[in-house]
Amino acid sequence: MSTGRDLRSLNDSPEVADAFGKLVSGGRSNYKTVIEKTKPQLRCTACSKILEGKEKFCPECGKKLTA
View 1 (cartoon, helix red, strand yellow):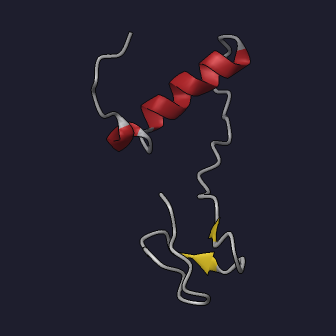
View 2: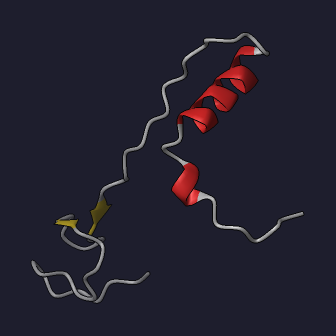
């Protein structure tokens, strides 16, 4: 069941990192987890050019990009 709240603004909160560390470690305190925050690279399916993500057409080959 979801509340529909957008909690993305709390991602960088130290309290969230501490709570996640306790969850992962089985309740041990001062357990620091590494939360990877990398974005996957978007590529054109036709020419494999790396895209920014806001293009509607590939700037290299002109293929229409789907969302």
